[in-house]
Length: 102
Image (tube, rainbow, N blue to C red; front, top):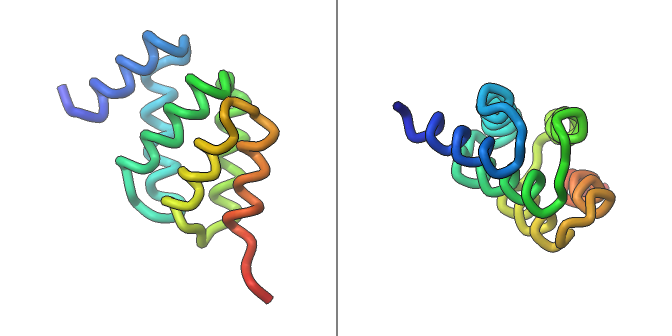
């Protein structure tokens, strides 16, 4: 079993979302902006465990990230962690990190 599948199954047992869904979200998040699976895993873990996002919310978050690229993955991770479980702050992190200087 791949490391990614093991990660998805472990997280699935903790947050109640399907491992297949978590795998697909990880793939989309990793490929959408920056291709960093380790950072993407941390973001997804934070969103599911601390922010308690459900499947629809997580799908919306990843879709918003995809539309806001390019984006600094490490800054996004930092902002999501700073949200401390508050979904609305996690979503605000996307626009905060994705904002392009004028």
